[in-house]
Length: 80
Image (cartoon, rainbow, N blue to C red; front, side, top):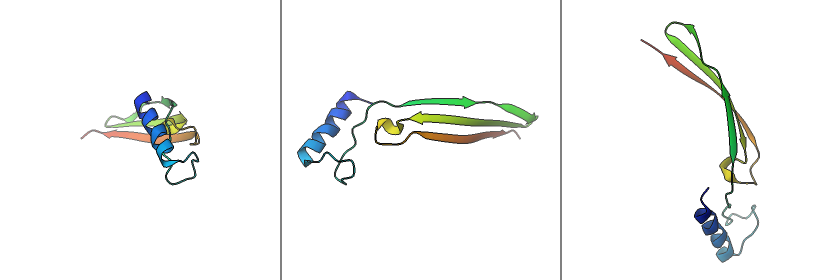
C-alpha cells in the first residue's frame, strides 16, 4: 500500500483521538499483504475448459488486524 495513504490513516486516527481497532471511528492503517495462487487448467471435452484455483492471503488488505484467508475458485470457459 502507499506510504502516503498509511500516513493519512494515521493522521485521521490521531485527529479523532482513537487507537483501538474496535472503535468505529478507527481508520485501519495498511501495511503489506502477500498472496499466492495455485491453479491448473484442463480440458475435459473439446468445448469446455476448467480451471480450479486455490489462493492464500497473508494480511488481506494489508491490515495486520485481519486474519489470513484461503480462497478457492473455479473458472470455466465454454466455447460455442
